[in-house]
Length: 407
Ligand SMILES: [Zn+2]
Ligand SMILES: [Zn+2]
Image (cartoon, rainbow, N blue to C red; front, top):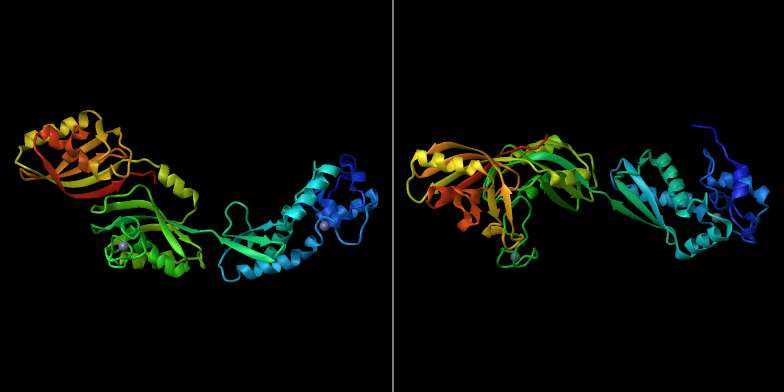
């Protein structure tokens, strides 16, 4: 700790102290006018040093804060109480002050000067934070606090904002017919109706629900969301090393989750498996969403009439020769803008072939529509395997074998 220091001459010279007039101020409010000068002391101590020099009045209550700065102890107790039922290691204190107090502070700054002034709210937040730190052993944290306690100073009420819990990992989806995220019923939008059998959703479960349910149980959260590095089709499995994701748990009561227990329960469902679960942060979601990486697929297709291996190899060679132009597929055209994009097919390997059944392992650039690459989407993907073979192709199965991300 550096030694306390206060440049009294600068404080006296830089402000128009005579403009204080007959306004009485408490030590804190007086010292806060030059709160950015010096260090190692409270505004109240600054005020104590200044008072004899500027000859300002004391007593009769503080014109500016009307005693608010004497209430920090009470505010700290309110904050401590509000934190009691939430497991957290870090917190941040915020506060709302009445418009009247804010207006008086503004008026005082205009008259006396505000070159070194600190706002009242900042002092309350800091002083309450110090008391809460001392009483609870939790740390005040500005960047990523677990919870933010907002003090309504006029009503002695604390509003708690609990920041979400984020867990990162990779998931494998072992069964077909499961969407990545919960899909609300298209008729009732989640309320429950005859169409969805009262469940409010289109599918029994989702990767999100399988992963979140155990973590929700452990954390006591109020809701969840799953953020993935892209998504596979509902009828496609996600195999290999899995797909990176961040699961978000809203309003968690507990933040210390035993991730090995969660992993064990998720992996015993037979539907979804998770790998490498670890604590994460909100910033990682944006990074996931920005990442563009190749993917490798396994695809099983059937040609409408038999083709020769030679012709198949020729067809594949022409898919690799130049970028493929893909117009937004029919199946997603109701929700995505109609445009044409060019994507590279990196490699295609024939792993099974009997004349009409073809199994392919395809590595393609991020954003490729792989089913369309094979069946051609009625000419919207050019070239396509069906196009170059001159035979309609039906896609029977699709799996994602690998997401080639950086990690
Ligand atoms: Zn005051
Ligand atoms: Zn419904």
